[in-house]
Amino acid sequence: MIDTPLVADAPAMLPERDRRLVITLAAQGRAHPDPAVAAAAVAQVRRLNRRDRTVRHLLLGVGAVAFHGGILSLLIAGGSVRNGPWWPWLVFLLAVPAAVIAAGEWEVGVLRRGLRPEAEPPNLRMLLECAEPGRTVPVTITRFRGLRAWWPVLVPAAAVVGWLTWRNLHVPAKLMEGLRSAAIIMLFWGLFLLVVAARRLMRRWRGMPPQSADAATPIIIDASGLRFRSLPEAVTWSEVSAVGLLGPTPAEPQAPVAVRWSLHGRDPIVIEADDMAQPPETAIRATWAHRPDLRWRPVDGDKPVS
Image (cartoon, rainbow, N blue to C red; front, side):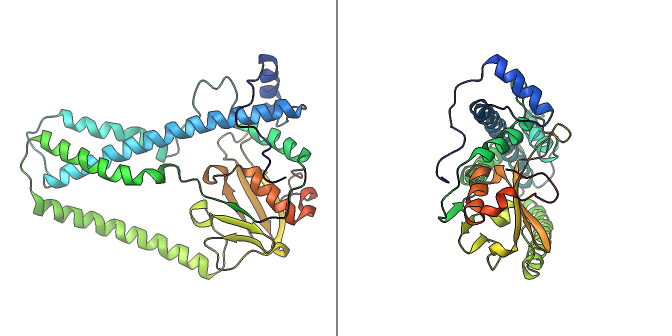
């Protein structure tokens, strides 16, 4: 059943012996042979992933508030600060973790006891092999908003930080100079966003599949096929050649868990699990419900996911 989760939200903790075997098998790209242990391993890896993602979003939020607040304080001061106290500049140091994360240098967190992200895909594939067929009912894969949901808080927080930082700089406000600097910055970002929007419109005009979940979710899976927000028409089932689970491996530990739909004569559509509110197996089982033959079909030359 599609609405029956393969992985419980709060399974029992893995015994030490099972945990060591899960880690050993995952290093070889293999799943634990016991479905109950495999499900517990997937659940615990996901819990650790959610913890790391929460920390990452928290650092990004704090860093964004600090950075934009500091920039705002400089704009209020006219873009030039002399003879001011040095300590308000520590606000900018809070943006360093966000810069490290944005640059892709974020490493998997500690205190995982060896259960790294690459332990999830092989065990989840094994659970999918044992999964019951789903019902042919419409399924909507919604978007995981994450840090996006905090924008109503982050924007006023940056304004408060900027105002307080300027007050503690003890320099007069030079609003006209600040507005001139802000206009230059807004012009630069406006041109950048215009180029990004033009590229997305060009891809949509050419009928190309979306490149990210920002453009693809929500996903509606029903009898007509796959419907993505950025595509004007549904991807019919006759166009879908395979569906599979991607994820980190011992060779590529930083690769994200994702669902890939292979299409005839077109680039595949890949949606990362972190960008979906539902777990990836929900999208896979919903696809299988309408295309049972895809359960035994390889994905772009890989071995079948079931």
